[in-house]
Image (cartoon, rainbow, N blue to C red):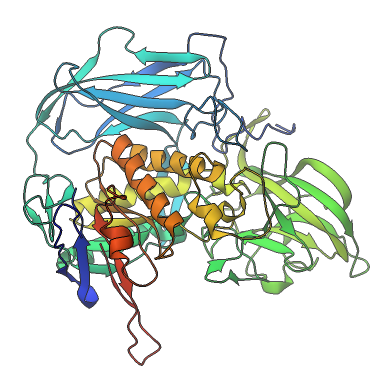
Length: 594
């Protein structure tokens, strides 16, 4: 319901299953966990004072179409930052170290700086993509660079500057003056809005109506880009243009839907088992992955995301691990302990010493955090690593804990390439995966090319990590969804906002984003959920110049007076109601969507 139209309105959209739209108004050494980025970002090089330096700026084209992507790339040196995906904050909430991040943005003006729009920037990892035997083959293709992506909303001359701020200060580029480009007419209709004349409907910035037709869809694991190439042309050919997809389900950030999988414990409710633990953690971290009697192995590979390699190439394999009372052997005459190994589908025999191929020495007994190192050389025509297993093998007791895993090309002379493993950190709530993020770049650009618009679900309310961080920043082994909903000035709210900023920075330019949905099916009568959704909308409306529509969802009911029509929550643009309808054939669910 639109709070500016007291009667409200509910419109039946042309969405499959009769979905309804209800719209509101407007080398060898143990690296530091902070400085060791998985894809080779250099360590901090700052000298005191002055602020970070912006160098190697490559401006976008001299002109760009209205609402199209204008992209600027650059590098940053002289920064004190040690976490490049986090914004600078000199006084974060309890549980977070101060001033480890860096805030980078582009400032854009079309009125000679009488006003300006601030577009957040992000650290971009370039990749080379190909499709081999139906699988995406994605490998790093150069050093990381910073990008600003901006979709200019008006014609004419736009001027811009770049700004970077960390604990050492702030600098702009250019130091004096500015840069410019021109915006020309384009075929783009702009972004999707609530119609200002009839809030039951959507329209584009240029006034063209948007009539949605579609359903819930997905792009799977390491096949995301392949799925996009296959599905989007079919959608267009059949006149379908609106799909709800779980960005959260691809594990850009957070512990849900990790690419690491267990043979022994497949699911924890509807979410894959994470094997994460608060028992012990490497310095400066919160969690580790625990392997014990109940769950002795986790693996990554063809089941979820194949690890791309090159044929006839040597690799270094490493894991930062800790063992506690790891005893054995269960089967005499065989080695025992923690090991990294490769194999096919080892199933629940993954902890047996005669399955797979060990790539590292075995580690047993009790040992503090250290790096375990091995190697692998690919064969002719081998473009994907066999399933990589983190395995507690042939043990009678005790546990192994893992903090991070690396697979790096051995370049010779003590030099190594970037990490080829997606989600290598067992602290996934502080790690924005560059592989999956690049996949979403591709998916959204392909969606735009085929006239497909996506409602993207951003976070998972039952996420293992966020639900175990208390408001005071301490950890608990007892799951609590209210830890996820997160009050202001708490560690979890801060981490969520860091990701919301990343959404605005990386994909805010895209007209293919119909809307951001906070989460899938939150509590319909939780004030904490309401407050988090309002904070989500307010943050994006303040930090995303494109101002995409913002919403959330509930698992049942329609809390109108309590939430959707409540003026206390003005930053939710459109309402959403889910209704599951039994067909007598197993209960096919039909949902009504914003």
